[in-house]
Amino acid sequence: MVTVRFAPSPTGFLHLGSARTAIVNWIYARSQGGKFLLRIEDTDQVRSKDEFLEEILEDMKWLGLDWDGEPIYQSHRFDAYREKAEKLLAEGKAYKEGEAIIFKVAKGRTIDIDDQIHGKITFNTDDIKDQVMLKSDGSPAYNFCCVVDDADLAITHIIRGDDHISNTPKQILFYEALGAELPKFAHMPLMMGADGAKLSKRHGAVSVEEYKKDGFLPETLANYLMCLGWSPGEGVEKVTLAEAVKLFKLEDMSDTQARFDIKKLTWLNGEHIKDMDTGKLLDLLKKQVTDSGIEITDDAKFREIVEMYQVRLKTSPDFLELTDCFFKDEFDVEEKGKRKYLDVEGNKENLKIFADELEGLPDFTTDAIEFVCRDIADNRQLKASQIIHPTRMAISGKTRGAGLFEMMEVLGKEKTVERMRKAALA
Image (cartoon, rainbow, N blue to C red; front, top):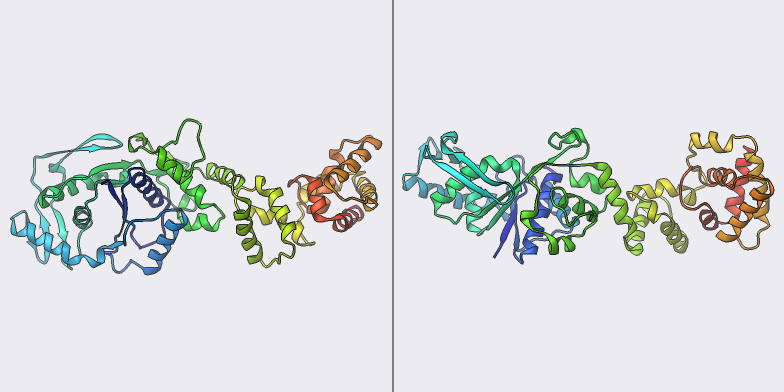
């Protein structure tokens, strides 16, 4: 059975690169009907923190990932590492240096790796120094304990980043020395920043937690990360985890580096929001609005507002920014828009005329409001936009938003007319 693992270190938050590795491993395991295991690399007892682990596991669940069985903790397996190290020492394959146990690397050997992504990669043991298995403090060295764990867990495929390629020949030597079956290796090109350098904090947010707080959907982030180096099909941008499981093939992964593009991620998030179940979006936005201190008193009206703006959102925080005029009378006014549309000669007079006509309108509906607007424009020999733009500024303080006449209906006659009159007199 195909068995893969993801091995986070709880010394910090879940990095985007690590999240991508977890997602690809999960998809591959599920596509093969195999197992996805979780191993916690917490041998660094000083830097490893429970709060980091809790956050990592929560972020994985948020992304839609689950795992098989209970996580394995390296900190609980020191006895197993010592037993294997002492076995190799007894067999003459290692030596002691103080309290440390060090593996002897035979020189003059060629190690060929049949990488599932890059193809054949060759190393020479002349370039590999003797490898520490147990440090003098009794803790295991990374390459050794990983091999012991992977062998014990019967890992069949190790899928990880290119930054581990140099570790692979060292680990192969340990597999051979322990008489363990060699897994298949697949090294994914690293995720780079927009400038082509390795993704780091100087490129902006690099942890899953930060994108979660910035209003990106878990479906979007998983979608984007899985498609950095793999494509679900020509011209296909939007894909779910479930869809990827049916389409994914390890050999289809690219062997070239992929660049993380925040603009592309933001666009993709908007596409996911457009297709999101409105009820689910309502719950998400309702919490966001109430957390900001705004009380929602009319659920039906709130739903209308969400439905109007669903196709216009890129991230969930955009919602309050675009719709604050529906929830409070004191809202931000775009100064550039005010100068362009409200301070132009004649526009305030048009606003007053429009407000007067609306006040006597018996049915304050989208169609009726639009008819009045266009009728005034025709009578005054104006373009409808000469009335629409100032009105939008008057009722919302913004130059963009949902359809103006829809906005006015939802806002209601009283508030709409009041704001128009106020802007006309300012």
